[in-house]
Length: 115
Image (tube, rainbow, N blue to C red; front, side, top):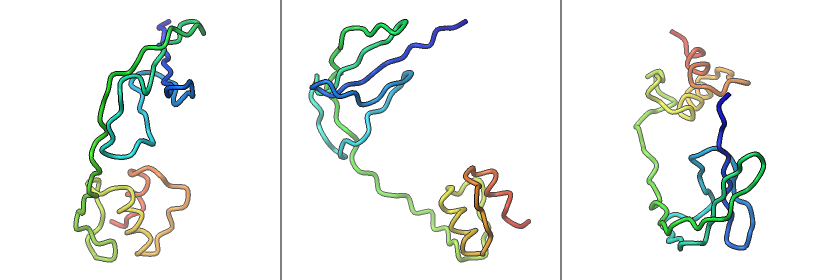
C-alpha cells in the first residue's frame, strides 16, 4: 500500500487556505501581486501528525491573461469540434436549440452535435 502525502497551506496568522496532495494551488490572489516570503506557510501531514510550518518563498502571481478569442461563432453553421472549449460547445448547442441538461464533459457535449 502506497502512502499519499497530504499538505496544508496556511495564510500568515494561521488560517488554512488549502489541503491536499501536491501540487496545491493558492487561489484568490489578484493578478500581478507580489507575495512576500512567509505570507503563506506549508505543513506536511504524516499519520495525522502535522509538521512544523515552513515559509513558502516569495512569488508573484501571473499577470491577467486576455481571454483567447477563437473566432468561433456559436450561431454559425460550423459545428464545434474537440478543439473548441466546453463553453463554446454549450453556446453552439444553445444557439441550435439542443438540450444538454446533465452533460458537462466535452465528449458528452460533442456527442449531441448532429453528424
